[in-house]
Image (cartoon, rainbow, N blue to C red; front, side, top):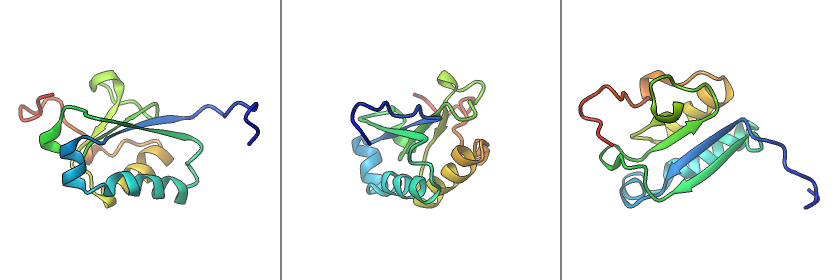
Amino acid sequence: MDPATPRAPFDAHVIVCQGTSCTEKGQGLPARELRTALFDSGLQHRVRVSRVTCLNLCSLSPNAVVYGAAPVPGAPGGGAWYCGLTPSKVRRVVEEHLRDGRPVTDLLVRWDDPSVSP
């Protein structure tokens, strides 16, 4: 790609936590699986991935938030918050949410659950 050519806009933005708890509990596997699943699905150019140092849900780690693809009413910023990620759960998020536009409801953080405290 020519550096002067602007990159096409992306459809979704995934924020992946790379904090200590998320990294230790997930051993880096969710982030690697996200990249692999995006490439396998042909979504690597439509989904922006950013890493952050903490999403403040350490007890539920590893965590990620999806913005822009099928917002979730009642969730902070409309994002779809996914916690306790494993490689297979990440693949489901990519296939069902990012590719098909349906948040994976059984994996979403329930903000009305008293055990969830940001």
